[in-house]
Structure formats: structure tokens, C-alpha cells
Length: 73
Image (cartoon, rainbow, N blue to C red; front, side, top):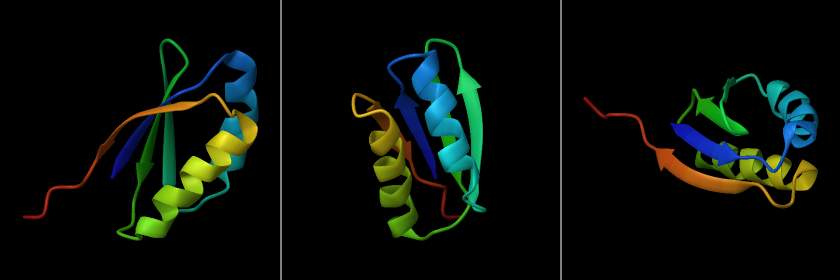
């Protein structure tokens, strides 16, 4: 699963990135324009909620743009 977040500023990224990087099943990629791509390497739906809650705890104005589920093949 990949979750796309838009953070409010560079300062927000500096706060959110360390909080999310402690999660073992998560890979982060910083994109232009305060965008953060969060790849979740597990099928646990609770982890999506945890990622959102952590992001919003450190940046209450963060916006989730999309959630792409992995292909089931």
C-alpha cells in the first residue's frame, strides 16, 4: 500500500519523517512540494491508521491525497 501525504511545510516534514521512520514496515520517499510517499509493506489495515494519526499529530494540517492498494495477483 502507498499513502500519499501533503505536509504543510519543510518544518512539518522534519517532525513527521522521524516519527514515521521508526515503523519497521514503512518506507518513506520525500517528493517535491511537501509531498511524502509512505509505502506500507504489510497488509495490516491498522498500520494505515497509525501512519495517518502520527502524521496528523505532528502536522495537523497534513492532507492525504491517495491510498493505493497493492495488486493482488
